[in-house]
Each structure stands twice: as C-alpha cells, then as structure tokens.
Image 1: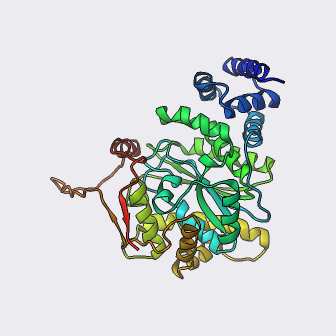
Image 2 (image 1 turned 45 degrees about the vertical axis):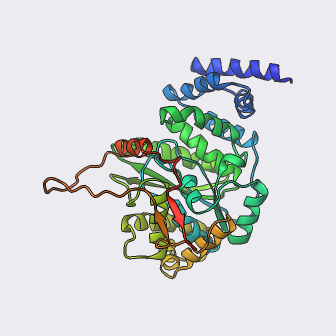
Image 3 (image 1 turned 90 degrees about the horizontal axis):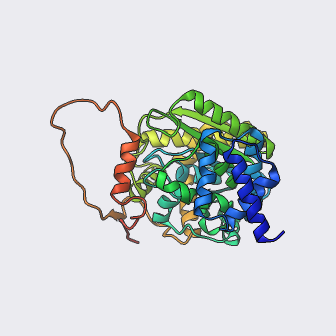
Length: 378
C-alpha cells in the first residue's frame, strides 16, 4: 500500500472516531503509522487528540492503540525481571523517580527508566536528570548503560520508542492537558516497548491534581491493571491523596538538589519526598521479590539500601554512565538564580496549595527550559 492510500485510510479512520465509532486494529495502526512518520499533519493529529476527550476509548481500543504505538517504533530488549515506575504526573516538586531508580538497581533488578519532558509541570524527570547528566542516547547506548549499571534515567526523544506518542504530546503541550485514556496509552506504550515486566504506578489525587476524585483514579487504575495483564505485565497501583509537593524545590535544578538531599541522607532532606519514594520503591520491590520468592519486605529493603548509601553509590554510577559528574553532591553545586525571602504579614498556617497556580508560575519564570541554573564544581 502506498503512502497516499495509507493517508486516505487514516483520515477515514479519524472521521469514524470523531463520529464516535469504534476502530479496528488495522485502522488504529494506520493512524499511528501516519502520525509517527509525520504524514498526518498537525491539524489532523490535533483532531485525533481531541477525539479522545469526549468518549474516550473502549478496552479493546486501549489495547489496540498501545500495541500500535509500540509496533510503529523502536524497542528496548532486556530479559528477566525488568522493573519500572511511572506517575500520572501533574504534581510540582515531587521527584521520586530519581530516588527509586537507584534503589531498585541497587537491589539487583534492571530498571531502564525512559522518561518524558514536562507537559503540565515545571519539570519532567528527563528535565531534572539533565541537570546532572546527559539524557539523550541511542537504543544501543541505553542497552549498554542498563546492562552495565542496572538502570538509567533517559529521555525518549532520541530513542524512537512510541514515536507517535511524542508527536501527540507536542500537540497537547499548548493546552497543558491530557485525557485520562491518553495518559494510560502513553505510559503503557513506553513500558511495553522498554520490556517492562513489573510496574509501580503512582496516581496522585487532589483538587488541583490531574486526578481530582478517587473514583476516577480507581477507574484509571483498573484500566492500567487490565491493560498490563494483556501485555503480560504485572502492575501495582498506588492511589494517594496529594495536597502539596513532597519536595521543597520546584523546577529542574531545585528538584535535582532535593533528590541529592534524600540520597545523601542529609539533615536538610525533604522527609515527605523520602517517605513517598520509599513507599513506591517498596511496593515495586514487593512485586519483584514475589517473582523470586525471596520473602523480603520491599520497603524494609528499600530503606536499608537508602540508609546504607547503596542507592547514592548506584545513582553516582548511573550519572557517570550517562556522561555526568559522579562526584556531584548537594553541597558542591551552586544555584545561580536569585533568592528572596518573603515574610508573611501575619501569622497563620498554609491550609491549601493550588498546584495549577504553582505550575503556571514556575513555567512563566522559565521552567523547564531554563536548566542552566546549576554550576558544578569538581
């Protein structure tokens, strides 16, 4: 079939979806193929994105879309237990992933973390990791890094994994908004393509989060579990009430410093961030240990790995493998941005934090693009 015929079939499928019709796998594959090869165009891709907001997708369409996104892109090939963690996101200043990855790798499980850049927040995991190390690698380089040190924190942009999703995300960025079903497809396509076998999914719920109601979060969690099962992936979901950032910093450099505070176990470390990272790492380890029959407690092991400094040692090995400075620490780099203390005019207690406003303010100030706030000293 030539490109012209494929394009016409993709447009026809898009018309059917806009009319509320269910699509077959062949129709969905053609759409993803056209998007991934940049043949559909921004306008029609935007229509496709909009088509998911009202009706969403059936369970079969979720599976077809995920499968098609994977099959129209590159894949990472690993064997054995391959762990991963992901969050539905939208929360400022809560960088648990970069704490969890070295804990899991130090426990002896491979964790190729392929992360995105920010869509709705002041920083994505890839933006924060880029403060400390390079995140753009080829499939061969990622495979070598993970097989050598056990884990990585890399950006999908240069890997060609689920390329249709990356183009769809670019369409979504101006809206700073994603549909629930689109979030599910986006996350699961990348996990399947990375050979993930065991996944911990973090779903924060709150009045200014992506997920505002526990009922919606539970529905999304159920879709993740069922979709994971179809791909032979074991998924555990952590649905949690989130009222404020778990860390102290917002934006790439400040969030990177929070991660170092926790891994170094300094007195200044944000304890809420540490607690959440340990809870998620513990649940993921429980899932992995269940496969090995070790009988170990996931959270106990995660805490031991963190307190004994093994997570920090592993994180430095990952940074080195990703061409960063392995000697970086919370006290040997300087934040170059201005610091101003604002004193409240009267006493009181902060009762609520508007996450949307916090995200918007930080993005207006330059996050996540402005990462050059950090001067490393060797």
